[in-house]
Length: 482
Image (cartoon, rainbow, N blue to C red):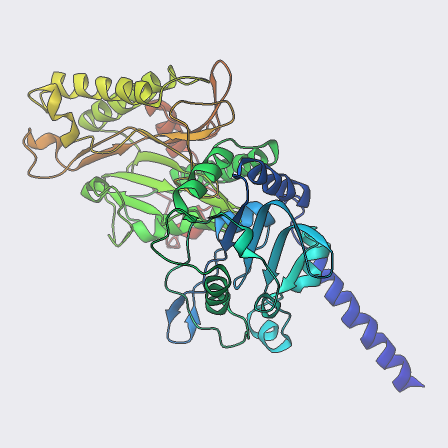
């Protein structure tokens, strides 16, 4: 009797642990209704007698038998909410009829449940899980794709971004991504040179129209990602010390991100001190001591698939020098000039030109350049880009539209050996903020992290909750120094 009671208790404990593991998860993911609305929106844009085909991203090898943490294809996630590999989605313009007389407008083939694989690499939804959790009804396992009677002869155009490269073999799955791609090519009589039937450009045009305008549900997640990124910037400002390394500063950013629920960073974190900041996409972050230099920190949290992109440039010793202050203020003024342009219907190029004009005039007055045409020497990149499921998110329009989320990121970078006074050498400043375009103006989403010189210096002077973590332990009788 005692053994039966113990077994029963053990059973209920296992059930409780399973339920807890399944339910103790974030509750603010995009809803099945959102993903369904995106599929329908794409269907309405598709040309007659066409099908959109989207494959998942492959699993990619990190080293030997270790894979990178899996990152879902943003298009697959956008249209389904599915975040697993080895899958293919088909969205038909017109209703299709199966051999059994069933009608469908979409088909989804996903990886099967596999007890051994799930024990090693994590739970899978399987076809039934997709139906229940993601609300997609016409879903099958990848194995069923080979024999599924899809009549591609009636399809005039396949709208697809193409096939993922670097497809890795799967040790667990009978129908992995490579198999799905090969089966698709066979079924559709795919020819790489047939640009009329297989249209990549059309896919990017149509999905660009959808993804460039953020829905209210998407904006909730983007706001969260931006706010977390701002928290990271602020906490680093309060904790920064000249004796820190670039990697330590990167780690503080990403610790704060994780603390507030961000699953990852949206791109490689850039923490460039001194002249390292002049490398636009510097990601080594290996300098062991930032000293008294400026630190350019371009770090964005990713929350439920959506990424922020926020850059702050701060003095490691707490105070901007005269030269640093002059360059920083010039970049700030350029950003403010661009902000004045932002609204529905405004031209992207007009905002870019406004910022560039301010920087060119300023560098000319500081005698850093001899003529305005040389501005690109020290301001070599564009002003803005869209953010969302990608840090450089897909877009289509030539002018701003209400509901777009873009970055505004002017910068000045003066490497050593530049053709100007040495006092400017090694100064790199970028200020990047995320904004939502509205009908008559914009909303500064990244308002939570200071941009003005005096506000940054005030933030750096604050006591940090991380001080006991980032500073070495004090000796007996020793006072804490900045």
